[in-house]
Length: 239
Image (cartoon, rainbow, N blue to C red; front, side, top):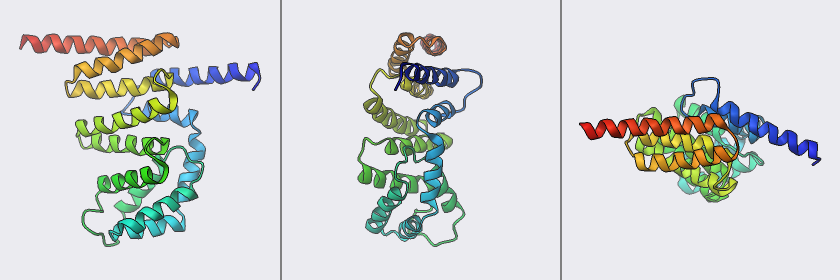
């Protein structure tokens, strides 16, 4: 890559990171999703996931999954991932799976019509197929985080957010600016359950990296959240 190419690539990353922190009210993981979409080739992932979701392998997996044929379904899920070869994010595939399950008239074994059961099964099968530290696993964990949050089960949402963050720290490095939004979002959830100590730890990481990478709005958001924690702690001590 030429010097100009390296500069423009760095500028693109900086612009995407800045966009993740600016300009709109962000619900749950929208900022993460937008950033990942640009930085990890979201358009191609979308196409590959749809190809997999409409494949014969997926039809076989869906049938075996609903019938409770665990071993057969696990094998077919590995085949589904092969159809999506090159994909880096399984979000769209999990969404399509959930949609098909929600509107399916097929008979199911046990609680397999439950979306959480389905997505946890997908997570386990994906881990077995590609290994526990794959970005594909992280994308399913992030999806599960969103499902739990939709059910107001914040502790479970935090659990899967942490799992996702752990994988990304290994993939990108513990000081990567790509983790800024993840530290922030995890801290927000930790504040909800009053785990202020751990929230502050994540915010300190966020602020340190944001200062190093010269992303002032991320620094401000981190400091604002720390101030929010200080006020909550002060209020709690007066009760």
